[in-house]
Image (cartoon, one colour):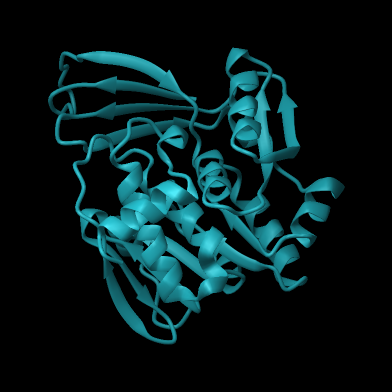
Length: 275
């Protein structure tokens, strides 16, 4: 669950600033991306966990309400994951994540494996334990399932995870932090904020994002990743173009999972931008 505070400027270390509003909205990088992919037209099943607190039921309903299958979403004792988010008047944000139930996703169940084996793409983030992501990617790779990784919150990636990643989706800061050498991942997509995104793989190119009046960039990166996955088999260039439009659309709405657009909304912005 995202706990969102709005303030004129982000606080510096040791600084207290006065906020202008506060609200809660369903989030979580995995859930945001699952919702974005489903709203963009993909068939999506979510693997993960929520707590047995008051947030857990709301988070589950957010997924199913967007058309995401929750058969592999477990409920564990304790708190759901939360993110404390501060958004300033320039639509920039800072985020602190507390994993909660996500930290308990430490092994794949038989149902998890069945979901992965039936998938075309496995899209993972790093809000669950790293060893679980590695196990899921190894299992997926052995079954010719495309593995797509958004390594956020950013951390050092072990070689075994890189070796089992087909598509890496990073922002500029994450790319610099990870410092991948050339050719270690077949497809690397780097998001460039309002400028769009770049692709490196069999070819290299950049795609400009449509110009929009940004309200909140919190969910834009997740909307990008979900739409990218939903459109991946149309080819990297088409998928990156579509994802850039989806990310721009999300920036025009507040919140995270609620900000992603439907296929029709994304297509309308794409057409308006002359894509």
